[in-house]
Image 1 (cartoon, helix red, strand yellow):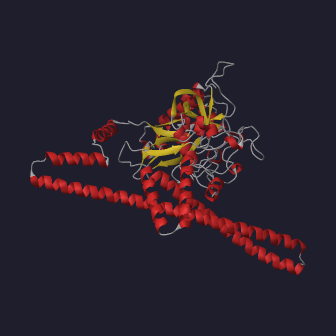
Image 2: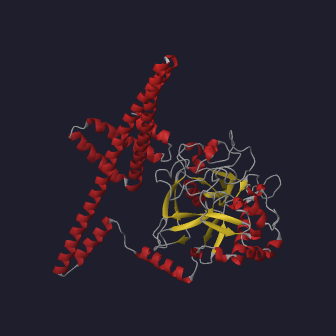
Image 3: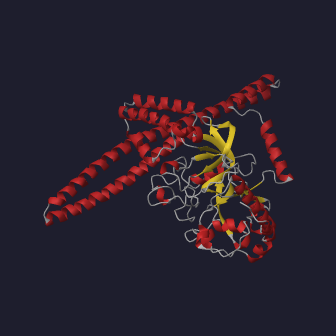
Amino acid sequence: MRLLAALILLPSLAGAQGITLPAELYDPGAAAAPADLVLPMPCGAAMAFQKVIVPVDVEDPLDDRRLRLGQSRPETGYSDYLRTEYLRGPFADEQASFFFIGRYEMTQAQFRALSGDCGPYGRADRSAKGGLSWFDAVDLSRLYSEWLLANAAASLPPEAAGRAFLRLPTETEWEYAARGGAVIEATGFPLRHFFGDAELGAYAMYQGAGSARGKLLPVGLRAPNPLGLYDIYGNAEEIMIEPFRLNAVGRDHGQTGGLVTRGGSVLSTADEIYSAQRTEYPMFDAATGKALAADTFGMRLVLTREVASSDQVVRGIIAEWMAQADAPATSDADALTELSAMIEEETDPRRQSALSGLQLQFRVARESAADALTEAAKSTLLSGTVFVGALADTTTRIRQRSDALRELVDNMRIASDQQRLAYTETAGRVSAELRDLRSLQRAYLLSYRNALETLITDHQSATLESAFRLLQDELSLSGQDRILVGLHAFNTDLSLYAASPDMEEAELLAMALTR
């Protein structure tokens, strides 16, 4: 790809003209909900972005959000196994940090604008731009940043403070946004797909019946994800800024490799499209020696800014870093040890007595907090056990009602007209009961997942073990044998869920019902 040098002369003209590109070519989903941010481009074009909130303590410049990304399936574990990452947005308001990511993949129209081609736009210009190499994508982000800062800096959000720029996303930014970020339910975030058990074809253009046929298509034809991002699955596979790394059973391996794309493409099968999916390609074509640029390679930009953006910001970061580095150990054991040493060294009897009283209060508070955590874990363990029982009962009722409905349908085939009318009315009532039961089953399943998720994310293993033993003893002493059996089963489920928190609803239900 050769980007025209004339682009350097284009900006002032395009900036003066403003956005002239029809909205359907840069934000086709605006009719349902407009983009959070629209930035101008050369030639009167534009690009739409969505705000991605990352909850952190904005007063602490070192605070970031801990995320569990990846998936638990071993067959692709070398690439996308579960791992811990950390994320913070470059911008912030009073509540949270955030970044902006392209609402759509870069289109032909936007590529033409950055290439200096200001000719008339047509419907074909809405298609995703493919055929890019990693170097092309990086250069396009540079050209757009330079144009934007030189000609339309005022269009940047106030939080950008004039120091923003555009680049390819990191893998953590992309996957966090693809899964739905902070707006999706916590129990839905770890799933393989953000849409649960809905049809992939409603959200992605891929290699499947009624979907794409190997050619990049217009953006925004399918439904968006919970953040309002379109084509996050399928269409063009999106180039990341980082090189590929293996997953060394939960962490990034030390060897870096080729370029990474995320999200799958029109050539991907349904099994190859999911939030954690990553594909490595060589940076260069071995046959030609040139940078590899596949037909399906596209891009989606992120609006960000540098971390240490001013002397004042740097001073704040240094102060917080020094405070945390110099802070004494905060574990209860270390604090009590230090307090005991202070009591022994104190020669004033009154001060020694006061410190001893403080030591006692500290121990009482620590024990009270530990008891509260254990009680909370016990309550959640019991709730999860009850939800398992409720799921089993509801599933049995669904099976019974389904059998009754099938019997009614069979009877209708051989019944007289008068009997058929009565059967039809009864079948209507049974169908309504089935809908209600399935809705109830899904509510129980969501509560069951919530209990599992809360226990593995909010409690240490020692607390869980203590809570389990206490609850087991209480149930045994009170003769609650049936619930005790359920508790042991739920505790087994907890171990299985911890190893595979991204299981789909059907898998989760099967696990709950397997006894």
